[in-house]
Image: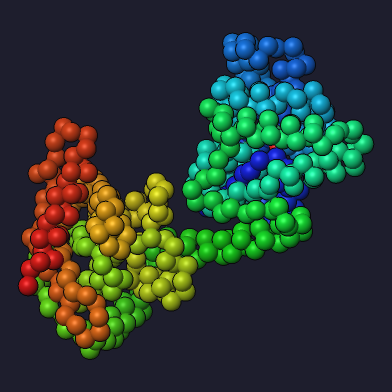
Length: 429
Ligand code: DC
């Protein structure tokens, strides 16, 4: 699985320097997406194309070749590394980057260049648009005052004459342009880590980001292991049996367990158990306190914790990446159902989802419909205070196809029906 790091933020935050350092240090391919927009700008200027001439721009884009090689940028085979940093490009690139056709073509190009590679990209819309599923997203920021100071220093070093007022105006203009653009606006992705670099030196930023990415990389390694279902050897079965027996005994010591409806698990085919989720221990109750082998579907982040990862592997828990279209996970679930295995899913998606008013997730019904599998609802009751009563009430299997209608929302509606059934069962004493 490729590892993708997205670094976004306004200009003057040190993105370029930091990203190029991190690429070397972490052995990632470095992609400066701003340079792709700069290349197009240079070509449009060279060919004197009006920025309003959509047809001509489309044609130019079709016949443009942008490549990166050893820290150099090539436009149609020509080295333009220095050229794209000069004023004619500087003064027009923002406008060009907001042309819809240019944007589409550059996003496609950036994705193609990154395909199958471990890569770090810097830009404005990487985490939000180019790679919304990136493994790490960082949003670098700094106050306008600090960015003005940095740009002035940079200009001085390059021998470029500029006043503070000019630089400030330029930065404020570009910020506004980037943030209010209707195409690929600069904005922090919801799951991005915000790093304010105002009071940090470049070295400090590099160190901080290096630490963040390294730890994410380590986590990803653990998580990826979760997607490998090891063979069900007799050793593994024995380990599972032993651990299951041991943990079930503990469960019976610490809780007064009452179970009803176990006969509903006697189906001769793969099916899905759907329960309410009030505590981490309710998944354990379902997995440990019956004779069946039940594979839970759980958020992949849990695989980061070594002990949970060990238990996850023992009980073949299927990881799922939250908020992402996790095809690998869906495939694992469908395969398991086809193999007549039993899956466990919490339609609330999170603990106490119902109380938090979280919309019921439709994954279980989606899988059941795809695999033509039944859903067994389970209501779990109790407070999970030590030595208190825990009630596990299994309901009759539901054939969700009976809810199927022409309404495109039928899966959502059926998911709600399943949830209602679960809630009914939690009240059963
Ligand atoms: O990072 P830079 O200054 O080289 O970027 C040049 C321009 O391209 C800048 O005005 C913002 C724009 N850009 C963009 O819109 N989206 C990106 N992913 C990267 C840059």
